[in-house]
Length: 577
Image (cartoon, rainbow, N blue to C red):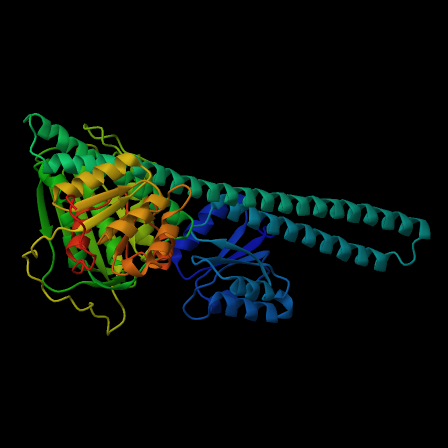
């Protein structure tokens, strides 16, 4: 296909990196790909040539995608030009309807699935090419008809028959293209359904894994509280604790990746000081660093570095990079964390680097280091993970409009990971007020009446034993009816209630306890393997005061117990009575 015959496609996006990715995805189709970085530039490109399709970003700074589409289709020459909207945000049905009313052919979502985008554009390019061929054939026929006015009717009839055959062939090809489009839509629907089932499976798997992990975690905590009879048991107990924590992190990572790819993660953005993020991440990684006797050097400036973001997710990003550095750096190695401001493509940016003296990264591995399930050579201790930690880092940084890069001089020469985030642009962006400093002294521990409800007996009994060792009076129940009966007769200060019980669910038990006047002061805490925002909202709606994900953070549970109001339950009768 020569230059004049190539089909043109207009790519409109204000982010050069996305334009490059579109060109890479569509480069194999042999199309003439034309760039535009704004709605105004897109309109200018349209005046220069004809395009088979327009790939149009919805969110642009000067004229957004919907306004640009309206201006394009208002022009008679371009009113039929198909538009594919690209958006990083899941649009509502009203926004989707608005797009279709403006002439949208379809939507694609960021991150773009290359096969889906390539197929959509290829179909439009082929339809455009066939339409141009038909227009050319009709023009040639019109010219021939003009020149053959004096020719015999027999030749004119033959020409008409040829044209009819050509039209029939074109109609057949158009029908085939329509069938291909329908088949591709069916395949896309099947992919989306498979993705939905995968996410449901991961959620169910995590729930089923968290139940036995809760019992194991409680048992480990019991061992940690109890002095070991055999001194050799202490290292084994510590190994159990570390490996349970490792399993919980793997489950959390799997769920986070699944939520991001399905667009279910919502950032709680606020002004954040990067120095605080560094501090939280270092605090998380400190036990791992100490266990390997590694040297950690942290360098942060005296002045705040303010970005707009989710403080928990940003701390998660840096903690992942730190734990990765610890994992791939041997005992006694050196790790360095540096945070500062640096010039970027759009002004000053926050720059955070994590450097290590560890195993390094092979050159052929660097381009794939952030891919899902992609791993470098496993460290000597075998703790290679699932290859999802760095993929999760990349996605979380992208959600903050930032970037992350890896570099290494080669195997055995250490590695460096650099995160860049845009600084908070609002002049009035300020850090939220810090809470008043509290005394470090804990209040005197009070004995509390606690009811533990869980159909997993190992989990219930181990948690009850743990609370009993701390001096609390603990009852147990293994189903909803027994929980209600025990609560009505024992008047607990706190009920730790499993959600996923057969028969009567934890939500139903909570609603019935809330309906009991004698239990109005009882605190209800949900215990569950599910921890999404929807799960927490459902717990609040059922009457729970808190929501803990299995295996529970026992320090968090202790803080809940210490914050309980004074007991208002009727005194219990003594056994002698």
